[in-house]
Length: 495
Image 1 (cartoon, helix red, strand yellow):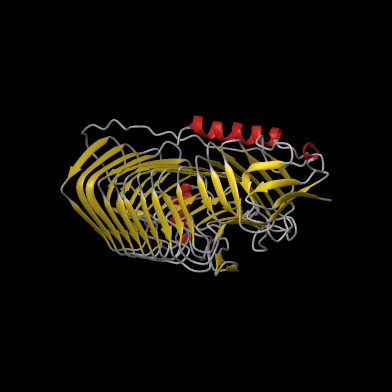
Image 2 (tube, rainbow, N blue to C red; image 1 turned 90 degrees about the horizontal axis):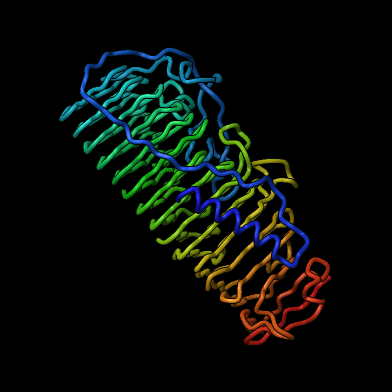
Protein backbone atom coordinates (compact mmCIF):
# COMPACT_ATOMS: atom_id res chain seq x y z
CA UNK A 1 0.00 0.00 0.00
CA UNK A 2 1.36 3.38 -0.91
CA UNK A 3 2.16 6.23 1.46
CA UNK A 4 -0.63 8.26 -0.13
CA UNK A 5 -3.19 5.64 0.90
CA UNK A 6 -1.97 5.77 4.50
CA UNK A 7 -2.27 9.57 4.43
CA UNK A 8 -5.81 9.22 3.08
CA UNK A 9 -6.70 6.97 6.01
CA UNK A 10 -5.31 9.57 8.41
CA UNK A 11 -7.38 12.33 6.83
CA UNK A 12 -10.47 10.13 6.89
CA UNK A 13 -10.14 9.46 10.60
CA UNK A 14 -9.58 13.16 11.31
CA UNK A 15 -12.64 14.10 9.24
CA UNK A 16 -14.80 11.58 11.07
CA UNK A 17 -13.70 12.91 14.43
CA UNK A 18 -14.65 16.45 13.42
CA UNK A 19 -17.96 15.36 11.92
CA UNK A 20 -19.17 13.27 14.84
CA UNK A 21 -21.90 14.82 16.91
CA UNK A 22 -20.07 13.73 20.04
CA UNK A 23 -17.71 16.10 21.79
CA UNK A 24 -15.95 13.05 23.21
CA UNK A 25 -13.02 11.84 21.13
CA UNK A 26 -10.79 8.79 21.31
CA UNK A 27 -7.48 9.60 22.93
CA UNK A 28 -4.09 8.33 21.86
CA UNK A 29 -0.92 9.26 20.08
CA UNK A 30 -1.00 10.68 16.57
CA UNK A 31 -0.92 8.05 13.85
CA UNK A 32 2.62 7.18 12.95
CA UNK A 33 3.33 5.42 9.66
CA UNK A 34 6.30 4.08 7.87
CA UNK A 35 6.35 4.49 4.11
CA UNK A 36 7.22 1.48 2.03
CA UNK A 37 10.25 1.81 -0.19
CA UNK A 38 12.21 -0.79 -2.11
CA UNK A 39 15.44 -0.43 -4.02
CA UNK A 40 16.74 -2.58 -6.84
CA UNK A 41 20.34 -3.69 -6.52
CA UNK A 42 22.68 -3.42 -9.51
CA UNK A 43 24.92 -6.47 -9.38
CA UNK A 44 27.95 -7.26 -11.55
CA UNK A 45 30.43 -10.12 -11.69
CA UNK A 46 33.58 -9.92 -9.58
CA UNK A 47 35.44 -11.94 -6.95
CA UNK A 48 34.44 -12.84 -3.40
CA UNK A 49 36.26 -13.44 -0.12
CA UNK A 50 35.55 -15.41 3.02
CA UNK A 51 35.01 -13.37 6.19
CA UNK A 52 33.56 -13.72 9.67
CA UNK A 53 31.77 -11.10 11.79
CA UNK A 54 32.74 -10.13 15.33
CA UNK A 55 30.75 -9.46 18.51
CA UNK A 56 28.71 -10.80 21.54
CA UNK A 57 25.39 -12.33 22.83
CA UNK A 58 21.66 -12.05 23.61
CA UNK A 59 18.79 -9.66 24.38
CA UNK A 60 15.39 -9.53 26.05
CA UNK A 61 12.28 -11.57 25.45
CA UNK A 62 8.56 -10.87 25.85
CA UNK A 63 5.37 -12.68 26.74
CA UNK A 64 2.47 -13.58 24.50
CA UNK A 65 -1.14 -14.73 24.63
CA UNK A 66 -2.00 -18.40 24.45
CA UNK A 67 -5.55 -19.62 24.76
CA UNK A 68 -6.61 -16.01 24.45
CA UNK A 69 -4.93 -14.50 27.50
CA UNK A 70 -2.29 -16.72 29.10
CA UNK A 71 1.42 -16.03 28.44
CA UNK A 72 3.70 -18.52 26.76
CA UNK A 73 7.33 -17.67 26.11
CA UNK A 74 7.68 -15.08 23.38
CA UNK A 75 5.30 -12.75 21.63
CA UNK A 76 3.47 -14.12 18.57
CA UNK A 77 6.02 -14.59 15.81
CA UNK A 78 9.02 -13.68 17.97
CA UNK A 79 11.70 -15.85 19.58
CA UNK A 80 11.17 -18.20 22.51
CA UNK A 81 12.86 -17.42 25.81
CA UNK A 82 16.60 -17.76 25.46
CA UNK A 83 19.74 -17.64 27.51
CA UNK A 84 20.30 -14.01 26.56
CA UNK A 85 22.73 -11.51 27.94
CA UNK A 86 21.78 -8.25 26.25
CA UNK A 87 23.09 -7.96 22.70
CA UNK A 88 23.23 -4.28 21.69
CA UNK A 89 24.31 -4.32 18.02
CA UNK A 90 25.02 -6.56 15.06
CA UNK A 91 28.73 -6.97 15.87
CA UNK A 92 27.82 -8.36 19.25
CA UNK A 93 24.85 -10.35 17.98
CA UNK A 94 26.83 -12.02 15.19
CA UNK A 95 30.02 -12.73 17.15
CA UNK A 96 29.85 -16.46 16.50
CA UNK A 97 28.35 -16.30 12.99
CA UNK A 98 29.90 -18.13 10.06
CA UNK A 99 28.83 -19.39 6.64
CA UNK A 100 29.33 -22.45 4.49
CA UNK A 101 29.75 -19.81 1.79
CA UNK A 102 30.67 -16.24 2.83
CA UNK A 103 30.77 -13.19 0.57
CA UNK A 104 32.33 -10.00 1.95
CA UNK A 105 32.85 -7.54 -0.91
CA UNK A 106 32.67 -6.84 -4.61
CA UNK A 107 30.08 -8.46 -6.85
CA UNK A 108 29.60 -12.14 -7.53
CA UNK A 109 27.17 -14.40 -9.39
CA UNK A 110 26.78 -18.02 -8.23
CA UNK A 111 24.73 -20.54 -10.25
CA UNK A 112 23.56 -24.12 -9.67
CA UNK A 113 25.30 -24.69 -6.34
CA UNK A 114 24.32 -26.41 -3.09
CA UNK A 115 25.49 -25.12 0.28
CA UNK A 116 25.12 -27.25 3.41
CA UNK A 117 25.73 -26.05 6.96
CA UNK A 118 25.61 -28.29 10.03
CA UNK A 119 27.44 -26.36 12.75
CA UNK A 120 25.92 -24.16 15.45
CA UNK A 121 25.45 -20.52 14.35
CA UNK A 122 26.45 -21.40 10.78
CA UNK A 123 24.51 -20.02 7.81
CA UNK A 124 24.47 -21.69 4.42
CA UNK A 125 25.20 -18.35 2.73
CA UNK A 126 26.51 -15.35 4.73
CA UNK A 127 26.82 -11.98 2.97
CA UNK A 128 28.68 -9.34 4.99
CA UNK A 129 29.26 -6.79 2.22
CA UNK A 130 29.18 -6.18 -1.52
CA UNK A 131 26.67 -7.77 -3.88
CA UNK A 132 25.81 -11.42 -4.42
CA UNK A 133 23.45 -13.06 -6.93
CA UNK A 134 22.38 -16.65 -6.37
CA UNK A 135 20.77 -18.42 -9.34
CA UNK A 136 19.12 -21.80 -8.73
CA UNK A 137 21.03 -22.33 -5.50
CA UNK A 138 20.00 -24.81 -2.80
CA UNK A 139 20.75 -24.01 0.85
CA UNK A 140 20.35 -26.59 3.63
CA UNK A 141 21.18 -26.04 7.31
CA UNK A 142 20.68 -28.23 10.38
CA UNK A 143 22.59 -26.47 13.15
CA UNK A 144 20.91 -24.63 16.00
CA UNK A 145 21.59 -21.19 17.37
CA UNK A 146 23.50 -20.31 20.52
CA UNK A 147 21.13 -17.37 21.13
CA UNK A 148 17.44 -17.21 20.22
CA UNK A 149 17.46 -13.43 20.61
CA UNK A 150 20.47 -12.89 18.35
CA UNK A 151 18.80 -15.09 15.75
CA UNK A 152 15.64 -12.98 15.84
CA UNK A 153 17.30 -9.55 16.17
CA UNK A 154 20.35 -10.01 13.91
CA UNK A 155 19.87 -13.22 11.90
CA UNK A 156 22.39 -15.44 13.64
CA UNK A 157 22.13 -19.00 12.22
CA UNK A 158 19.81 -18.00 9.32
CA UNK A 159 19.92 -20.17 6.21
CA UNK A 160 20.79 -17.12 4.09
CA UNK A 161 21.97 -14.00 5.95
CA UNK A 162 22.70 -10.52 4.55
CA UNK A 163 24.05 -7.77 6.80
CA UNK A 164 26.22 -4.64 6.96
CA UNK A 165 24.61 -2.89 3.95
CA UNK A 166 25.11 -5.83 1.58
CA UNK A 167 22.92 -6.66 -1.44
CA UNK A 168 21.65 -10.20 -1.99
CA UNK A 169 19.53 -11.50 -4.86
CA UNK A 170 18.29 -15.10 -4.97
CA UNK A 171 16.50 -16.35 -8.08
CA UNK A 172 14.86 -19.79 -7.98
CA UNK A 173 16.30 -22.42 -5.68
CA UNK A 174 15.39 -23.36 -2.12
CA UNK A 175 16.24 -22.78 1.54
CA UNK A 176 15.66 -25.54 4.11
CA UNK A 177 16.47 -25.12 7.81
CA UNK A 178 15.78 -27.45 10.73
CA UNK A 179 17.71 -26.10 13.70
CA UNK A 180 16.38 -23.95 16.53
CA UNK A 181 16.51 -20.24 15.67
CA UNK A 182 17.26 -21.03 12.03
CA UNK A 183 15.37 -18.44 9.98
CA UNK A 184 15.17 -18.99 6.26
CA UNK A 185 16.38 -15.68 4.75
CA UNK A 186 17.36 -12.63 6.81
CA UNK A 187 18.28 -8.99 6.04
CA UNK A 188 19.57 -6.83 8.90
CA UNK A 189 21.02 -3.35 9.14
CA UNK A 190 20.33 -0.05 7.41
CA UNK A 191 21.04 -0.28 3.68
CA UNK A 192 20.97 -4.07 3.61
CA UNK A 193 18.77 -5.35 0.79
CA UNK A 194 17.65 -8.87 -0.07
CA UNK A 195 15.55 -9.90 -3.05
CA UNK A 196 14.10 -13.39 -3.49
CA UNK A 197 12.18 -14.62 -6.53
CA UNK A 198 10.59 -18.05 -7.11
CA UNK A 199 12.24 -19.48 -4.01
CA UNK A 200 10.84 -22.17 -1.71
CA UNK A 201 11.58 -21.86 2.02
CA UNK A 202 10.98 -24.57 4.63
CA UNK A 203 11.84 -23.89 8.29
CA UNK A 204 10.97 -26.48 10.92
CA UNK A 205 12.84 -25.39 14.05
CA UNK A 206 11.53 -23.39 17.00
CA UNK A 207 12.10 -19.71 16.17
CA UNK A 208 12.64 -20.53 12.50
CA UNK A 209 10.82 -17.78 10.60
CA UNK A 210 10.57 -17.89 6.84
CA UNK A 211 12.01 -14.43 6.15
CA UNK A 212 12.90 -11.55 8.46
CA UNK A 213 14.11 -7.95 8.21
CA UNK A 214 15.47 -6.10 11.25
CA UNK A 215 17.47 -3.01 12.23
CA UNK A 216 16.26 -1.15 9.10
CA UNK A 217 16.99 -3.90 6.59
CA UNK A 218 14.68 -4.44 3.59
CA UNK A 219 13.51 -7.43 1.61
CA UNK A 220 11.53 -7.90 -1.61
CA UNK A 221 9.78 -11.19 -2.34
CA UNK A 222 8.26 -12.38 -5.61
CA UNK A 223 6.38 -15.68 -5.59
CA UNK A 224 8.17 -17.07 -2.55
CA UNK A 225 6.39 -20.04 -0.97
CA UNK A 226 7.06 -20.68 2.72
CA UNK A 227 6.24 -23.41 5.24
CA UNK A 228 7.09 -23.06 8.93
CA UNK A 229 6.21 -25.63 11.59
CA UNK A 230 8.07 -24.62 14.76
CA UNK A 231 6.74 -22.37 17.50
CA UNK A 232 7.49 -18.62 17.27
CA UNK A 233 8.07 -18.98 13.52
CA UNK A 234 6.10 -16.46 11.45
CA UNK A 235 6.76 -16.91 7.72
CA UNK A 236 7.05 -13.13 7.13
CA UNK A 237 8.30 -11.07 10.07
CA UNK A 238 10.25 -8.08 11.30
CA UNK A 239 11.79 -7.61 14.74
CA UNK A 240 13.99 -5.30 16.82
CA UNK A 241 14.80 -2.07 14.97
CA UNK A 242 12.12 -2.63 12.33
CA UNK A 243 12.42 -3.39 8.65
CA UNK A 244 10.49 -3.31 5.38
CA UNK A 245 9.29 -6.43 3.56
CA UNK A 246 7.43 -6.12 0.25
CA UNK A 247 5.95 -9.34 -1.10
CA UNK A 248 3.95 -10.30 -4.18
CA UNK A 249 2.46 -13.77 -4.59
CA UNK A 250 3.44 -16.82 -2.64
CA UNK A 251 1.66 -19.24 -0.30
CA UNK A 252 2.38 -19.25 3.44
CA UNK A 253 1.64 -22.31 5.57
CA UNK A 254 2.31 -22.06 9.29
CA UNK A 255 1.35 -24.56 12.01
CA UNK A 256 3.45 -23.65 15.05
CA UNK A 257 2.25 -21.97 18.23
CA UNK A 258 2.60 -18.16 18.16
CA UNK A 259 3.47 -18.23 14.47
CA UNK A 260 1.20 -15.85 12.50
CA UNK A 261 1.67 -15.54 8.76
CA UNK A 262 2.60 -11.86 9.16
CA UNK A 263 4.30 -10.28 12.20
CA UNK A 264 5.14 -6.58 11.99
CA UNK A 265 7.39 -4.37 14.06
CA UNK A 266 8.06 -2.45 10.84
CA UNK A 267 6.23 -2.34 7.50
CA UNK A 268 4.86 -5.36 5.63
CA UNK A 269 3.37 -4.62 2.18
CA UNK A 270 1.80 -7.82 0.85
CA UNK A 271 -0.04 -8.43 -2.46
CA UNK A 272 -1.69 -11.59 -3.82
CA UNK A 273 -0.56 -13.72 -0.89
CA UNK A 274 -2.23 -16.84 0.49
CA UNK A 275 -2.03 -17.43 4.25
CA UNK A 276 -3.00 -20.62 6.12
CA UNK A 277 -2.35 -20.22 9.85
CA UNK A 278 -3.11 -23.36 11.86
CA UNK A 279 -1.35 -22.50 15.13
CA UNK A 280 -1.65 -18.76 15.53
CA UNK A 281 -3.18 -15.54 14.26
CA UNK A 282 -3.22 -14.45 10.65
CA UNK A 283 -1.39 -11.24 11.49
CA UNK A 284 0.10 -9.41 14.48
CA UNK A 285 1.16 -5.76 14.68
CA UNK A 286 3.23 -4.57 17.64
CA UNK A 287 3.66 -0.86 18.31
CA UNK A 288 3.38 1.93 15.74
CA UNK A 289 3.87 -0.32 12.74
CA UNK A 290 2.04 -1.42 9.63
CA UNK A 291 0.61 -4.35 7.72
CA UNK A 292 -0.86 -3.69 4.26
CA UNK A 293 -2.65 -6.58 2.52
CA UNK A 294 -3.96 -6.40 -1.04
CA UNK A 295 -5.87 -9.13 -2.89
CA UNK A 296 -4.76 -11.61 -0.24
CA UNK A 297 -6.57 -14.72 1.01
CA UNK A 298 -5.91 -15.33 4.70
CA UNK A 299 -7.41 -17.74 7.22
CA UNK A 300 -6.63 -18.79 10.80
CA UNK A 301 -8.14 -21.88 12.38
CA UNK A 302 -6.45 -22.05 15.81
CA UNK A 303 -8.82 -21.96 18.79
CA UNK A 304 -8.86 -19.40 21.60
CA UNK A 305 -6.99 -16.68 19.71
CA UNK A 306 -8.09 -14.05 17.19
CA UNK A 307 -7.65 -13.40 13.50
CA UNK A 308 -5.61 -10.19 13.70
CA UNK A 309 -3.97 -8.87 16.87
CA UNK A 310 -2.82 -5.25 17.29
CA UNK A 311 -1.01 -4.54 20.58
CA UNK A 312 1.98 -2.99 22.35
CA UNK A 313 4.07 -5.11 24.72
CA UNK A 314 6.53 -2.35 25.70
CA UNK A 315 9.29 -4.96 25.55
CA UNK A 316 11.48 -2.63 23.51
CA UNK A 317 11.02 -4.49 20.23
CA UNK A 318 8.64 -1.86 18.82
CA UNK A 319 8.08 1.80 19.64
CA UNK A 320 4.86 3.82 19.62
CA UNK A 321 1.23 2.89 20.07
CA UNK A 322 -0.50 3.31 16.70
CA UNK A 323 -0.75 0.09 14.72
CA UNK A 324 -2.06 0.31 11.16
CA UNK A 325 -3.82 -2.58 9.41
CA UNK A 326 -5.11 -1.85 5.91
CA UNK A 327 -6.64 -4.45 3.60
CA UNK A 328 -8.23 -4.14 0.18
CA UNK A 329 -9.76 -7.00 -1.77
CA UNK A 330 -9.26 -10.65 -0.92
CA UNK A 331 -10.62 -12.38 2.17
CA UNK A 332 -9.95 -12.48 5.89
CA UNK A 333 -11.39 -15.34 7.91
CA UNK A 334 -11.13 -16.62 11.48
CA UNK A 335 -12.83 -19.99 11.80
CA UNK A 336 -12.48 -20.55 15.57
CA UNK A 337 -14.01 -19.00 18.69
CA UNK A 338 -12.36 -15.59 19.07
CA UNK A 339 -12.84 -12.17 17.47
CA UNK A 340 -11.59 -11.42 13.98
CA UNK A 341 -9.72 -8.36 15.32
CA UNK A 342 -8.32 -7.95 18.83
CA UNK A 343 -6.94 -4.60 20.05
CA UNK A 344 -5.23 -4.22 23.44
CA UNK A 345 -2.84 -1.76 25.10
CA UNK A 346 -2.54 0.32 21.94
CA UNK A 347 -4.40 2.39 19.34
CA UNK A 348 -5.37 0.52 16.16
CA UNK A 349 -6.23 2.07 12.80
CA UNK A 350 -8.03 -0.52 10.69
CA UNK A 351 -9.23 0.12 7.13
CA UNK A 352 -11.14 -2.48 5.11
CA UNK A 353 -12.09 -1.99 1.47
CA UNK A 354 -14.05 -4.66 -0.40
CA UNK A 355 -12.72 -7.51 1.75
CA UNK A 356 -14.71 -10.68 2.36
CA UNK A 357 -14.55 -10.94 6.15
CA UNK A 358 -15.76 -13.82 8.29
CA UNK A 359 -15.72 -14.46 12.04
CA UNK A 360 -17.14 -17.81 13.13
CA UNK A 361 -17.56 -16.48 16.67
CA UNK A 362 -19.81 -13.67 15.45
CA UNK A 363 -17.43 -11.06 16.94
CA UNK A 364 -15.77 -8.85 14.36
CA UNK A 365 -13.73 -6.78 16.78
CA UNK A 366 -12.91 -6.80 20.47
CA UNK A 367 -11.10 -3.92 22.17
CA UNK A 368 -10.17 -4.73 25.74
CA UNK A 369 -7.48 -4.56 28.39
CA UNK A 370 -5.17 -7.51 28.90
CA UNK A 371 -3.04 -7.56 32.03
CA UNK A 372 -0.18 -9.24 30.18
CA UNK A 373 0.66 -5.84 28.68
CA UNK A 374 0.57 -2.40 30.26
CA UNK A 375 -0.82 -1.29 33.57
CA UNK A 376 -4.12 -2.70 34.72
CA UNK A 377 -6.87 -0.18 34.16
CA UNK A 378 -4.94 1.86 31.60
CA UNK A 379 -4.16 -0.82 29.03
CA UNK A 380 -7.37 -0.84 27.03
CA UNK A 381 -7.65 -0.86 23.26
CA UNK A 382 -8.54 2.18 21.17
CA UNK A 383 -9.95 0.86 17.90
CA UNK A 384 -10.58 3.08 14.88
CA UNK A 385 -12.15 1.16 11.99
CA UNK A 386 -13.09 2.54 8.57
CA UNK A 387 -15.27 0.31 6.36
CA UNK A 388 -15.06 1.58 2.78
CA UNK A 389 -17.34 -0.15 0.28
CA UNK A 390 -17.36 -2.96 2.80
CA UNK A 391 -19.85 -5.57 4.04
CA UNK A 392 -19.53 -6.47 7.73
CA UNK A 393 -21.37 -9.20 9.63
CA UNK A 394 -20.81 -9.50 13.36
CA UNK A 395 -20.66 -7.58 16.60
CA UNK A 396 -18.28 -5.08 18.20
CA UNK A 397 -17.32 -5.75 21.83
CA UNK A 398 -15.63 -3.04 23.92
CA UNK A 399 -14.74 -3.12 27.62
CA UNK A 400 -14.90 -0.29 30.16
CA UNK A 401 -11.34 0.97 29.55
CA UNK A 402 -11.50 0.72 25.77
CA UNK A 403 -12.97 2.78 22.93
CA UNK A 404 -14.36 2.28 19.45
CA UNK A 405 -14.76 4.65 16.52
CA UNK A 406 -16.46 2.97 13.57
CA UNK A 407 -17.14 4.60 10.20
CA UNK A 408 -19.25 3.10 7.41
CA UNK A 409 -18.78 4.85 4.08
CA UNK A 410 -19.27 4.42 0.33
CA UNK A 411 -22.20 1.96 0.48
CA UNK A 412 -20.83 -0.06 3.37
CA UNK A 413 -23.12 -2.14 5.56
CA UNK A 414 -23.00 -3.64 9.02
CA UNK A 415 -25.26 -6.44 10.25
CA UNK A 416 -24.64 -6.83 13.95
CA UNK A 417 -24.59 -5.13 17.35
CA UNK A 418 -22.34 -2.44 18.78
CA UNK A 419 -21.51 -2.43 22.49
CA UNK A 420 -24.51 -4.60 23.32
CA UNK A 421 -23.20 -5.11 26.86
CA UNK A 422 -23.13 -1.32 27.44
CA UNK A 423 -19.58 -1.54 28.83
CA UNK A 424 -17.59 0.67 26.46
CA UNK A 425 -15.77 3.77 27.60
CA UNK A 426 -16.62 5.27 24.19
CA UNK A 427 -18.49 3.82 21.20
CA UNK A 428 -18.88 6.23 18.28
CA UNK A 429 -20.54 5.41 14.96
CA UNK A 430 -20.47 7.46 11.74
CA UNK A 431 -22.49 6.52 8.67
CA UNK A 432 -22.64 8.35 5.38
CA UNK A 433 -25.99 8.54 3.59
CA UNK A 434 -25.12 5.61 1.30
CA UNK A 435 -24.29 3.18 4.12
CA UNK A 436 -26.54 1.19 6.41
CA UNK A 437 -26.66 -0.68 9.71
CA UNK A 438 -28.90 -3.69 10.36
CA UNK A 439 -29.19 -4.00 14.14
CA UNK A 440 -29.26 -7.53 15.63
CA UNK A 441 -29.37 -6.66 19.36
CA UNK A 442 -29.91 -3.60 21.54
CA UNK A 443 -26.82 -1.41 21.14
CA UNK A 444 -25.31 1.50 23.08
CA UNK A 445 -23.55 4.39 21.33
CA UNK A 446 -21.76 7.36 22.76
CA UNK A 447 -22.47 9.29 19.59
CA UNK A 448 -24.04 8.79 16.19
CA UNK A 449 -23.32 10.90 13.12
CA UNK A 450 -25.67 10.16 10.20
CA UNK A 451 -26.77 12.69 7.57
CA UNK A 452 -29.65 10.41 6.55
CA UNK A 453 -31.52 11.14 9.80
CA UNK A 454 -34.72 13.04 9.07
CA UNK A 455 -37.43 14.42 11.32
CA UNK A 456 -38.40 11.52 13.52
CA UNK A 457 -36.80 8.65 11.56
CA UNK A 458 -33.53 7.00 10.56
CA UNK A 459 -33.99 5.33 7.16
CA UNK A 460 -30.52 3.75 6.89
CA UNK A 461 -30.61 1.95 10.25
CA UNK A 462 -32.85 -1.13 10.31
CA UNK A 463 -33.79 -1.81 13.90
CA UNK A 464 -35.56 -5.18 13.69
CA UNK A 465 -37.43 -4.16 16.83
CA UNK A 466 -34.26 -3.36 18.80
CA UNK A 467 -33.30 -0.14 20.54
CA UNK A 468 -30.19 1.86 19.77
CA UNK A 469 -29.27 4.15 22.65
CA UNK A 470 -27.18 7.29 22.29
CA UNK A 471 -25.57 9.45 24.95
CA UNK A 472 -27.66 12.55 25.47
CA UNK A 473 -24.86 14.81 26.69
CA UNK A 474 -22.33 13.62 24.10
CA UNK A 475 -24.65 14.02 21.11
CA UNK A 476 -26.57 17.31 21.35
CA UNK A 477 -27.24 17.40 17.60
CA UNK A 478 -29.93 14.75 18.07
CA UNK A 479 -31.79 17.11 20.44
CA UNK A 480 -32.59 14.35 22.91
CA UNK A 481 -35.30 13.04 20.60
CA UNK A 482 -36.42 9.48 19.96
CA UNK A 483 -36.34 8.41 16.31
CA UNK A 484 -38.04 5.51 14.54
CA UNK A 485 -35.73 3.00 12.88
CA UNK A 486 -36.57 1.30 9.61
CA UNK A 487 -38.07 -2.14 10.17
CA UNK A 488 -39.13 -1.31 13.73
CA UNK A 489 -37.21 -0.24 16.80
CA UNK A 490 -36.03 3.16 18.00
CA UNK A 491 -33.02 5.42 18.41
CA UNK A 492 -33.38 6.69 21.97
CA UNK A 493 -31.35 9.01 24.25
CA UNK A 494 -29.85 7.76 27.47
CA UNK A 495 -28.23 9.97 30.07
